[in-house]
Length: 156
Image (cartoon, rainbow, N blue to C red; front, side):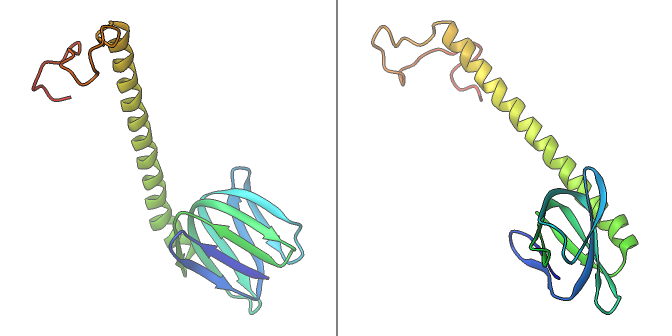
């Protein structure tokens, strides 16, 4: 079976001769062997493990992603970030902690950005409802139009 793990910028793993793959999604851990039916799932931040034909076990930490099996002969994982390692414990302790913190930080950033956008929309709505735009009187939008709560020279 062929295994590929890719990020937007590089191939982390691209090997043949894989006997089994172990991964984790929201429902828990699962395994894939050659001949597996076509399958598609969203992965959690986790460690992927696989066994080669020689019995060796290898690992890669992934920052979530999508896993797809095709024709029972290939497993492909697309993820935002991945790190290949020799030890499950080292990947779990070091890399997964970093991946989880990065994911939490991005979520906080998205939330802050959404709140800022909402505040801007609300301020514009208040401004428009107050009738401050003199569009109906023929004044162009670029003229000195007062904005409630702001004076000339004050930062937005």
